Length: 133
Image (cartoon, rainbow, N blue to C red):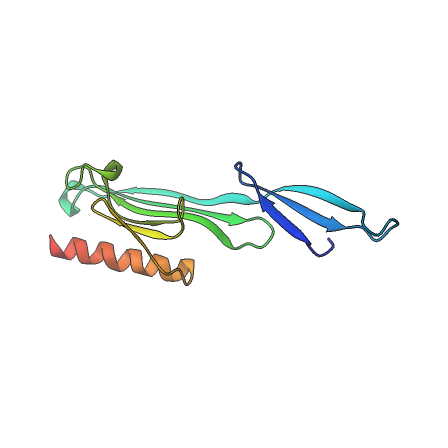
């Protein structure tokens, strides 16, 4: 596939790629529509009442072409200890307004380095909460 000249995202997780054509006229181009985001992880783990109750949720989407993480949602949900934010006690995602964390209803922007590092931060936050109880 030729090198990408431009890319535009649409509201349906589809990217439009403008690719050059090596024929006359030189300004000719082809538009390719590629389904860019693919959900590769969709996990939900129930935590027993004995171990604290709630649910750990992990969703990850990648770009089909680059194989890079494009969207993610990591959450500990427990309606018994937090009724707001749909029960999300702790979470990290980039669903709206960039990368951010959730903590008992408070939403704060986070500096994104990598998805792997974000998973580590989530695990540390959840472990600290679990040990604090």
